[in-house]
Amino acid sequence: MKLWSKGFEPDKMIEEFTVGRDRELDMRLARYDVQGSLAHIKMLESIGLLTADELDVLTSGLNDIADMIERGDFEIASGVEDVHSQVEFLLTAKLGDIGKKIHSGRSRNDQVLVDLKLFMRDELLSLVRAVKKLFDKFQTLSERHKNVLMPGYTHLQVAMPSSFGLWFGAYAESLIDDVRMILAAYDIANQNPLGSAAGYGSSFPLDREMTTRELEFAELHYNVVAAQMSRGKTERAAAMAIASVASTLGRFAMDVCMFMCQNFGFISFPDEFTTGSSIMPHKKNPDVFEIMRGKCNRLQSVPNEIALLNANLPLGYNRDLQLMKDIMFPATTELIRCLDMCVMMLDHIQVREDVVDDPRYDYMFTVEDVNRMTLGGMPFRDAYKTVGMQVQNGEYKPTRSVCHSHIGSIGNPATERIALKMQNVLDGFGSRL
Image 1 (cartoon, one colour):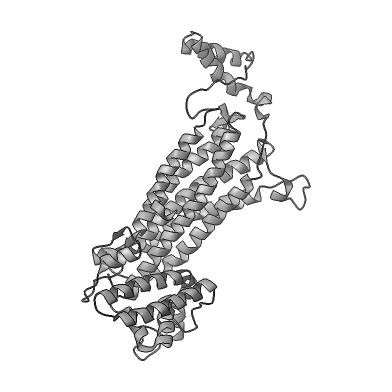
Image 2 (image 1 turned 180 degrees about the horizontal axis):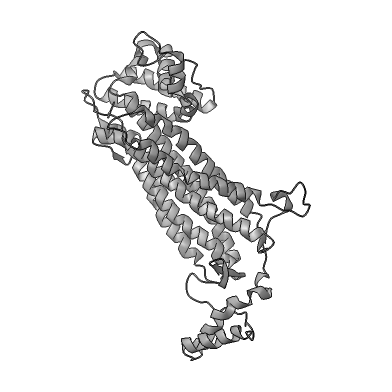
């Protein structure tokens, strides 16, 4: 049962090799395939290729399939090549020859392009929502712990005073840059390819601007060849956004693993959120964040996979592009799971408030004392030399007081400004969030 059938069936091994996991992955496209078909038939009626009665019958039939999908009763039957075929066969089985009319003026190429654009658009919105939850959690923790000091490091050497508020707030603000990447990918996905057919348009008088409005795309892929070329480019942009978020989250996971170890001891979690050792009874392992770090590192390879899959492809559709679903579909799911898990873990994070009382952190206050002398009138270089000699001679005694006042510093992490900065980016998604 194939839409392209001409009276023969391909070799079984050929079919299994070329179809691959498409039936399984296409289940995630089912609702979008119906959505695209509903817009397409409405346009076909407007240009006279369907009667008003036929439109009503087809619309009702597609809505029944949409309900089936939402109930979880939809499946791609054995021997049916893909989701597009299954929807059309269900419609034809119920309505007869009228069902066959939904394919007029389109190809499976632009049909799958529409499905993928709509799917990717929703996936990116889901990713933004997950990022926003983590952002809000970081913001809350930043404000709560803005005056709780912790060591800051350069070259992994104790450097200057920082605060837990700055640590959490830094990751909050960094996520804003990641959301900018998601927004860019969203804008690329939010263009309508329907009507490009196999990549070279159609002799039917298609109203492509109508389907753009019906599917609530922001813009149209005007050039039909450019519409086909967008497959791969859309996924590559989304992959870059996924990798950007994964980079931020993976780096935070590394911090947590490091700060949990006994040599640091800055943070901890309740026992039930850690794992133990089969031989060492004292162990509390940060397995959640180690797995998170590993997953995020893998996700950062997704843009490279997409780029290599698209390398040296000639103009027009090529079957290689089918394999992008194997890469992209699990990637968004995996990243959203990691983000949700991070939020859940941060609900239970325990911050140690007396970290800097340890003498090993005495020297991180040297800059504070140099600055204090400078503010008192001593030239900076003289103050630097004075404190440096105290350190050299073992005479340095830190004051252990921090007086930062500028925006974005200890005690003033600018959480409200950062929240506004995030909101300004989120506004770019319009009313969909």
